[in-house]
Image (cartoon, rainbow, N blue to C red; front, side, top):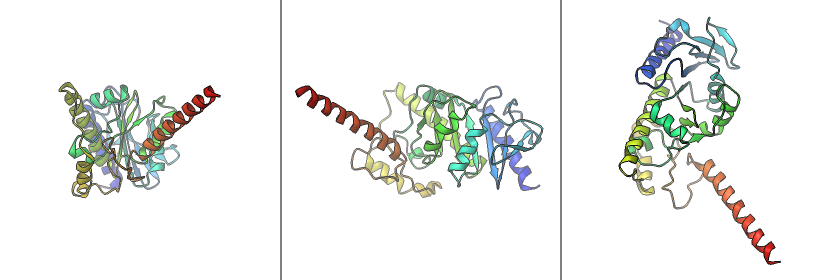
Length: 261
């Protein structure tokens, strides 16, 4: 069995699992794998639970179909953008699992460090701004987020994850949904308790034990002390929020000075 055919079978299996676990409904969701300068992707209009290896579509890195009778999902643009931003990524998975998509629809980031297994694997799970599906808005909204995260909520839409292969990307999707479900339950019990910065840093030191090889700090609003800098996955968001806050203060001061003249 050649490598490409095995990849097709792996995509079929991950699609079957997504459908069986109610991460997608009807013909929703999409999966892709990068193989050299080619992309093997799931077809549009076919349930992810009932795909066959021969249904897969092969595209070049510009999104042009070079093999296959089916058409790719119109959301393949998002996959291509992620591959452009992340040379270490070889697979992208997009789905609409209920709890995680619930948080995405409420536009609530999963950025608090409250679960040890998430801190040591995915870290914070940011939220990309709402973008119209199947348009260039979607990849544009994901680009700055996915540079520093392997999982991302899509506002009012769903979840996208990426990894070194299709199973890695799929298992990250499982983790995101499991985490969102736990947080949903915790909220009904009065809310999750956030880990302290000291506890988070201890977890960071054992990330390699969990197979997490990236150097990113998990990022967490519990970090009330000095900023640790660009190693934090939330660094760009924090800098943006701080800039907005500084601008507001400057405008307020100018307004007060002007009123006293």
